[in-house]
Length: 442
Ligand SMILES: Cc1cc2nc3c(=O)[nH]c(=O)nc-3n(C[C@H](O)[C@H](O)[C@H](O)COP(=O)(O)OP(=O)(O)OC[C@H]3O[C@@H](n4cnc5c(N)ncnc54)[C@H](O)[C@@H]3O)c2cc1C
Image (cartoon, rainbow, N blue to C red; front, side):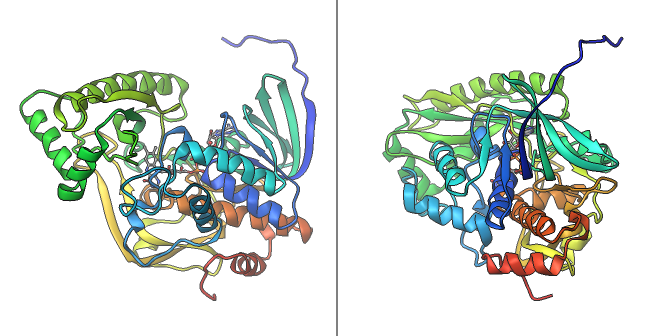
């Protein structure tokens, strides 16, 4: 049944060169790059803060897999990591040598607020992009919904950094989701934080035995039937440990076989995962040494996803491309061959984790350019790839790199009076290089 509602008016709130939709890693890279290359930029974010999964889902362990390896990410991601570290040090982490790529999501929120101010980006939080304005196959702006009702942000170029490809889907761009065989995506995860652990004791165990010590206790208790999460995940990565007794991110509570773009599934997933959080927290408090006086400090504001829609672009980056270290003429980012695909079924037989960091591959500009629609670019985890390749390009620094490339291309296309589809990729590459991105000469 369809109900007819009263017509809604849409006020024009802002006219800009580039509107970036979504303020996660990709959106941050896109907004900064577009602004630095002379565009007037609006950044629209649904939540109360920037950072995407890093802040909303406590995914603070960016690039942990690069630890101890010479491959270094470049560009805006590196700049932010170093600049953040100058301002906030190791964010109270007492395991400072463990992973140099950590953020505290709380300090990062504050850092990103002032970063946007410094870069001259018009920021709108609490606003969800709900539709696009199209004219003859060309995107002309986006409709946002907020406490102010519906508003139009008109723009010469729209960059979809929503993680879920919301804008591209609204514009009618075809997309795929999940594994090719069954459409299943990696699980949704609700991370949590605890406070009140005996930091000295926990650190001493971590230094001596590594986190595996705690995982062993978990496995033993599973074998004894003391705890059963209903899925076979065997490890629970733990983030920053502070002298004040906080463990900032416990990545363990999952929901499987749900659709990240279906609000009923999301509701189910949030509720189920919070039950898992309580169960896991009680287990930790009872059985892990040093956790006796722990309390549940906070549950991440939102369930997090590692994948959902993958838009159909002018080129689909594949596992084969990555495995063959392919570099394209229109390469806009280089990334190491790393896949992390958490079991979509929960059995853990189908978990893919592969770290082959001596191999690198190129991400082509065409994977950011959707088919059919003009003046739209996509960056982040929803670019055009197959399921396996998404398990690599979804990494936070790779998302910021595709964002940086999209923002740069948008600004250069506007300056040159071209469509983003026809931008001079050589000058995009040259600009990226001159702004700190390491790209091979092609
Ligand atoms: C539990 C978990 C652990 C992970 N661990 C790691 C890790 O250790 N290392 C790593 O590199 N990666 C990790 N990832 C993956 C990584 O977090 C994501 O792939 C990455 O954040 C994607 O960046 P993005 O900018 O494309 O999207 P997101 O981070 O999802 O950001 C999208 C942003 O857009 C906003 N948005 C969405 N829709 C709209 C809309 N319609 N209107 C306005 N705003 C909107 C969202 O609120 C969000 O801020 C993990 C992910 C999860 C869930």
